[in-house]
Image 1 (cartoon, one colour):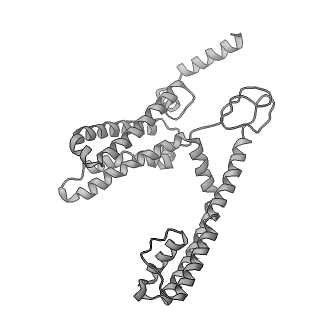
Image 2 (cartoon, one colour):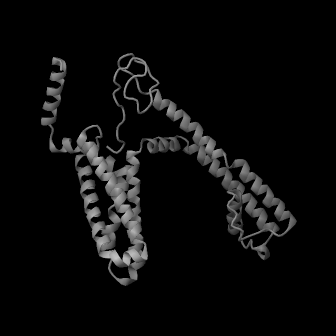
Image 3 (cartoon, helix red, strand yellow):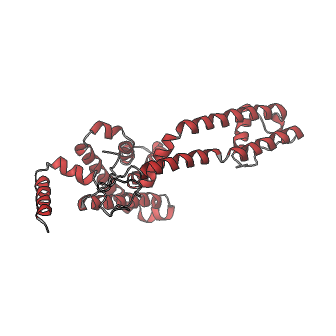
Length: 292
């Protein structure tokens, strides 16, 4: 080991020793490069998956009848664990209010809030609300999103394409209203089209090619309009896919060419590349968690 490497290691150890408790927790909880941070992420991922599995098992009647006390006990263990985790994130976050109002902050709160709300709602009359609040614990699975780089890439892509998708959605809605109104006029209540909203529902089901068959046009003109709606559905079904694909391609291109080698200053490296593809120098990771 050279003297420069020894000096770097000594300086790093000195910086770590000067860390406060809040800084150390921030590095472990929001960071991912240190061994402690990786261990914390692995433990949290396992806790999320097992807690959701407990929720699913509790919905199975024979399992709930046989092991309900154990399942409830496990749930409260996970609730306390996620409560401590949420409090720790609030404590060590660099911008606490921004974290609390962020997507991940709200998801973290939703992962623990239903259990406490259900605990404070007594009475048999509120059993349905109790069950609903407990089912909302499934939002914990969204906590996994912060560990999926591809999921974050897809989320950014959807945000970039939101205006185009909104325009497309508005166009489909207008077409649904037009076709629904025509079907209400042509078919009428005697053929199941009892109102314009019901006719619009039929149009949406037809355009999306779902076709439940609960309402079927009977007149020749209504069948012609139905055929036009189905053809329209097949014509536009690929539009949102094309919008997202184009935005996703651009976002992947931007992400790939945002990594610059400090040795040769060339771009074009893959997101998981460790060394430069041109000169072999080590690439410094530019990934950061988005909930800090």
